[in-house]
Length: 205
Image (cartoon, rainbow, N blue to C red; front, side, top):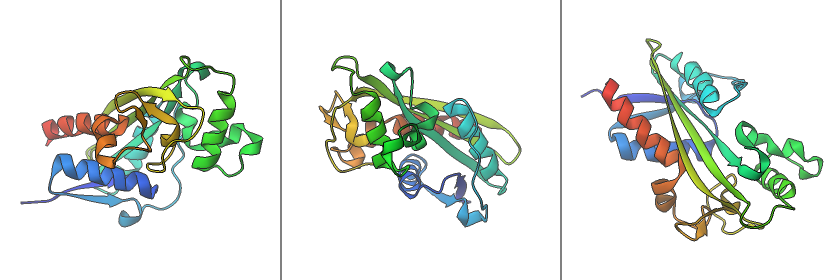
């Protein structure tokens, strides 16, 4: 039996590990490769205006390896900020001169700054994830997953990554940084999108 090989268009180690876990759980016998594994070097310019567009841009690059290219683009969309940080979630700190490095800490501090005058009850938002798949023959598919919650005023928990310490999920009465990876995957935007992606992928194979 031939093992299914997928190339993930990412160099974010935490994201790759999370995607690897989710895909392996859903697909079983699958080999997950990174861009580095297949010799695709350099940065991919993500200049799309939506999560779906950026995911497709990255998946098309991964598909140049000759294998099925898979990519996700994800971020936080906050209602009170008109959908920000959105596709700029990973580099939101650039909007705050005081935020320092463009890392999780800087992004979270910038988010808190922009929500400093927003009261409880108006701090709703959603984690959004678009997963794109591009086959070597050029065929493409895209799915989307969302997980709604509220943005807290301060950090809670030390797990996860990104905005997880601030993202309170009402069903758990905890942030994504306070739950186990298994709990998070069961309801997260990425988990929802991956399960929808796997369903569509199986229809194509």
